[in-house]
Image 1: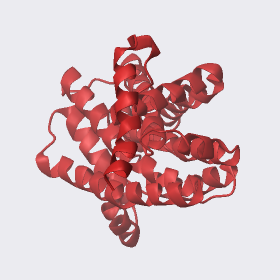
Image 2: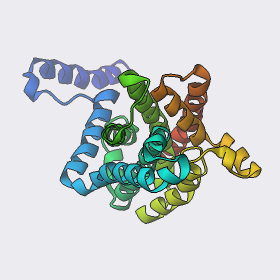
Image 3: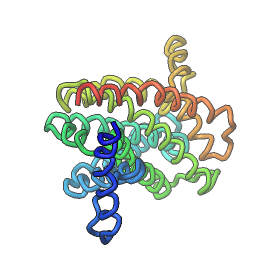
Image 4: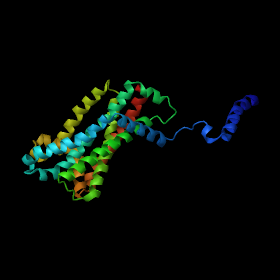
Length: 282
């Protein structure tokens, strides 16, 4: 028994000794930390955008199209003047532009799955959620670009947030938190759907009713009672209300809390579901 124990321990002592005396560049690689692995995968997501810049087009065109189109087409009819309508509209187009892009988290993951990349990443000695978490971190940059463009374009068109730069920055931060949570929904769907086109179609069927059946573009008081009730319960409506309050400098904890609670619930449900599907289906 003693001989067997020593024979098992001896290779470990021999391996530890010479390896410790090797130059750092020649030592065996160590397992990367969770943060390091996640940031590396986030960099991969950014490099994919750099190599295919058309993927960034949605972050640029969607804010421009919706902000300009809605302001000058509907502004006069809904508020009497485009400038007056812009003050109420811009927080809504900010929410719309960012939330519509969250689907690309699921589309990218579904594409990697279809090409067999997930199996290769799972074989690496890294923290397994790093691929998904890192991808979401990379996508958050696109959300930030979109949000910045919406506010910048609004300033050019005459939008003036009474909450100043601090209010606008807080509004962007809040939408990033909610968008990050919503991205977990699409990663779950991306691991179940058969094609990237199926993920996009499901996003269209879910997100368009949620965003347009909200208080983003019109006053719910003008809607039928049954629809107004649904709009009041819509989490997107709570998000738009919080965005308007932050930009106006009048937001209260009661405006922001429902958004944070909804983001926490979505993450608590769909983040574990995504990881379960990743282990089972990748």
